[in-house]
Structures are given as C-alpha cells and as structure tokens.
Image 1 (cartoon, rainbow, N blue to C red):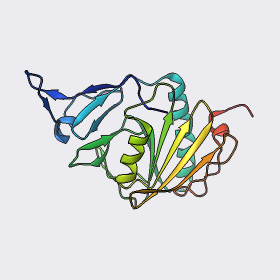
Image 2: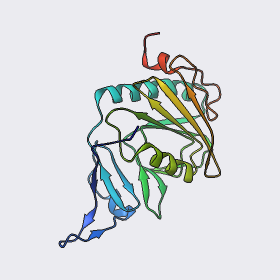
Image 3: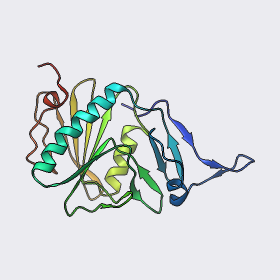
Image 4: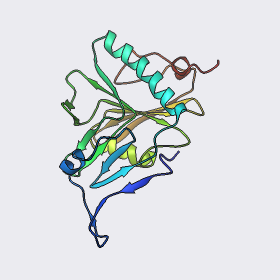
Amino acid sequence: MARWHDLLACVLATDDGTVVDMTLREYFETPESLVPQELIYGAMRVAESPTPMHQEAVGALYLALHEHVRSRQLGRVWLAPLDVVLDAQGPLVVQPDLFVILNGGAAVVSQKVFGPPDLVIEVLSPKPRIGDTDERVAWFCDHGVRECWLVHQLTGRVEVLHFRDGQVRLRTTHARLEPIASGVLPEFDRSLASILGYPV
C-alpha cells in the first residue's frame, strides 16, 4: 500500500522556478508544524494531516510499547511528529509514526534525533504518509534501522522486517490475533487485536 497518495512536494525555488536544494540547517529553521513534513535528499515534502483512525492506532501502539519498554527500562518510545536525521549529508530527515531507541542504541537524542532508531513502526492506512512503503523501507534499511513494523490497519496484519548490513534478512507476517514477534523487543507478546481492540 502506498503512503501519502495526496503528497504535496515542496522545495526551495528561485524566482525563475529553478529548484534549490534545502540544507539541513534550512529545514530546521522552517516554522514548526504539526502536519507531516520530511526532508528527502534536499527536498522538503509535506502532506495532509492523518485521519482520526490512523492517529487512534498510533496512540494505542504507543501506549502498549511505552508500557513494555518503560517497565523493563529498555529505552524510550517516541511518536511523530519528531525529526529523525538518518543522513545529515543527504540530507534525509524522516518522521516515522513511532520509533524505539534502546539504551546504548546508535541514535543520539538532543533537540532532534540523529542516527537510526532500533525499531521503526509505520501505520499504513488509506491516506498514507510521505513516500511509498518500499521507498521508506529502503531508507530505514540503508541507514541502520534494525527492525521495521508495517501495520496494515484495515486488514489487521503486521509485517515485521528485520534488517542487517543494508538488507532485509527476514520478513514475517502476523495476523491480528497472533503475538507480534520482534527481534528488538523479544519479550513483547501483544497481538494487534489486543492493542487496537479488534473484535475476536
């Protein structure tokens, strides 16, 4: 399923229409916004705000993951909109729906997040976010994210992708009643149905 069909691509341009790449500093100096916006190799992309259904799923997943991670003192769970700088030179800045940074992970958290989270979660819905799914998965894989969950909200499936050395090493699919098996959070045993309240 593609993400953000209604995408609006915005870039800096001169008076004659010539496109000018945006630097990381210029992106950080843009006014803060609650709508999704990312910097994709110099081009700032923005999109419409997500739907209530999408945000309800993101909120439920956050609560489940936050309880699990905090009770075990594993690290921190964050949710959009929060900039994650995957490549400062590209530059490539993304805002995943949710992400987990474990204690001792590669990412550095200051005013922004620099470096790859250990786990990224994207909720796929009829009105998706910036870039298509394959494109986003490639960004995560290429820049050191260890694991990605693709939550198919309408069908109740969760795909778990395990990355290593810039490749997808394992891809599993979990039905709505099956516990989500995670390499990053091996003790996590919740199903999507239990998290989102799907009828059994």
